Length: 97
Image 1 (tube, rainbow, N blue to C red):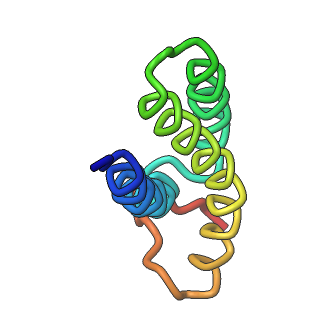
Image 2: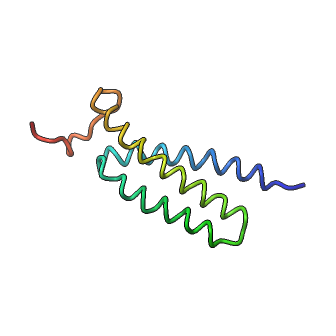
Image 3: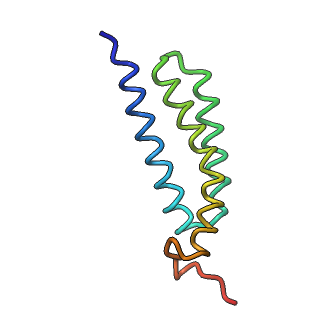
């Protein structure tokens, strides 16, 4: 039996969950400017997946990269959710009015 598909499915769910958590926590501590890190790491993962010969690892790297690229939009949306009061704002990062 081949378990590669099951492993890939589980890894995908884990990557999505971790990238969602990273968007929420990252926006809390660093603000919207974190999108640059998501872009660099995401593109790096995608590029890395082209060079890895192991099929499963290449797939996981690619999925991670695309989840991080999707996370850029989520970080921007998270800032709006915080402004609406749906998520807590970081009091140390609040801008003076």
